[in-house]
Image 1 (cartoon, rainbow, N blue to C red):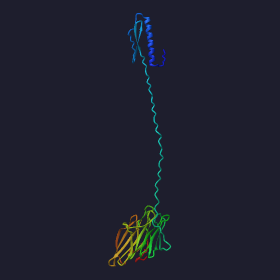
Image 2 (cartoon, one colour):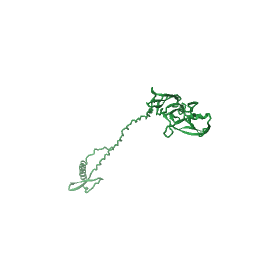
Image 3 (cartoon, rainbow, N blue to C red):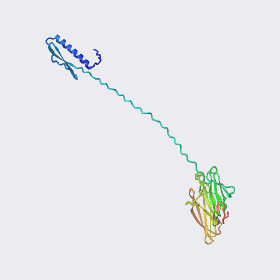
Image 4 (cartoon, rainbow, N blue to C red):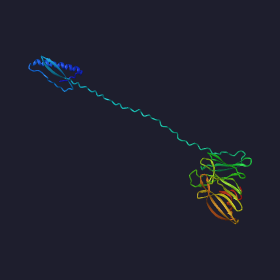
Length: 323
């Protein structure tokens, strides 16, 4: 048997129909049976509530309990759809490009003057000031100032910087480059580290000359060597009756350096000698190092050397201040 689904009607309408149906059913049952009567019969149906109706038929009272049709209230479950929130696309931030730091070009050398047309005692020399194997130039000169002269030493690096060191007015003295020398040559040293220096007269003393040493730094600029205490390094070349001083180039075992010389006598017969190696103790500093002591008789031809400035067989300042 097939079941057809009927439309659901309102509870009030269904109750009225049910009352009428059961009332008719009760009349039909009375007519068919003369010995039975339905009295107080209760028809119970599981229900949340019931409605009762009383019908009088031929003096008999028939009580009919009409069950209230329980209408199931369909509960609609609202299906909730959770919509996932889509995060906005990530914003791509373009990387910040930082320009590489470029070191500023080295500052130009402080002094760059060169000899004027009226310069005096212009003395040129040649050497390798930056150790690249190419000859560079050097020059010393004086500029008359009315009462004397202002003195200068200039270096010119081939393909590089040119710079000038001002010595000022030296009074009765003067300035003159003697030659290129090497205060710290070492065989097998890295390329560019064996650089020539400049040996120059930088004034006078009571019995001769004062010598100074100049070099060129990594920046291509000229500098004057000091004694490690901020005072200009000076080697005297002088002579008197009881003492003489000089300087010579020396070396051995693949090295070159300068040696300060000194000899003195108390009797004019025997001379005490000192040979002091000049060591480079810093980038721009020189100092007297190891001293070798000795003695020579007054008649020794070697004694003259202690009052001269010589290098490689060249005598730049002879005995007695012969320049």
